[in-house]
Image (cartoon, rainbow, N blue to C red; front, side):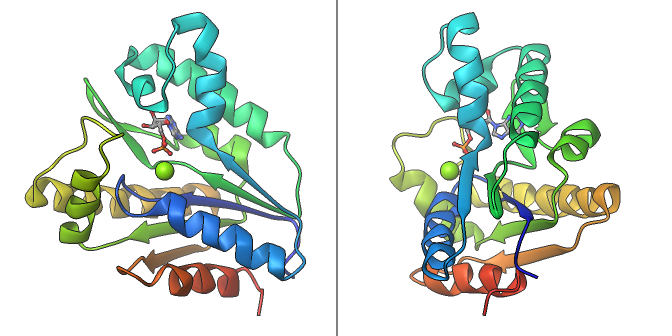
Length: 194
Ligand code: AMP
Ligand code: MG
């Protein structure tokens, strides 16, 4: 049934994750579902503000990786306690750090989150590039198509690994330009909402 879902939604920056998730939350609420939407990075930031004096989610990835790792596990444990009919977790498969791409969903984090569904959002490299160029609030994201293609590839690899680790069904959804509603509908249908 469509109840007691813990849906982890991932996708590289610029794929339109926030937009699709907002639409999805709306769709599910219209169908009478009790939905809770949590942004993993915000939970991490709340824990980081006092300790590291940072103020923006985009500053998290500039912290030493061991510090990010601690915050990551703390956030996962906090989210693990959250309850809702449908809990939607907005997060990342990997984070671009100074030391390289670092996993957002390592084994212990996945174990804590106990997802019932994993969703990977994708878009074309040119669409992602355009969105990254338009979004002046973000920084340090790759701005060349070949690099974006490599990130899309890495996302698929890590997504497959997450499926194996959790034993959870995985769904890849394309967020085409101007078709956010369609992407949201694909996800809600996969969750059993018709
Ligand atoms: P967002 O605004 O959703 O793109 O996320 C902002 C930042 O939150 C990311 O760039 C990461 O630094 C951090 N973040 C989000 N999810 C995770 C995760 N699962 N593990 C580690 N860091 C994360
Ligand atoms: Mg976002």
